[in-house]
Image (tube, rainbow, N blue to C red; front, side, top):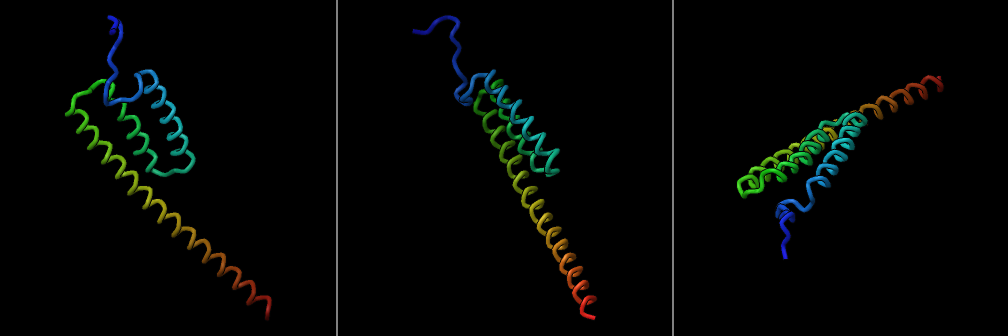
Amino acid sequence: MIFANDQMQNVYVPLPFKAHLIFCIIATIVYALEIYRKKSPHYIFMMLAVDATLMMQFFNDSKAVVILAVIEGLLLGAAIVFAVLQSKKRKAAAAVAAEAVAEAEGETDENSDT
């Protein structure tokens, strides 16, 4: 039996609006902290991807689902690309730092032998 004030839950969104909004706010705060802490741009795309899911609370037709899927795919793809680029950048910087330390130790050893 369906009562007059019962509302149908959107089939594309597993959470009620308030729970979804709270989830998005918490995710935004967590990703904002990660952006601040780690200075990696891929967290911006992750944050936007999570927040974009909130669109389904307002637009629940199949066209909106396809548009959101494309947006989510682009945002997550950009996050992956930027995460890989950031990882390569950090590895290169670590290799340069290790090489500089090795050179400094090599010079110290050479100076102590003479």
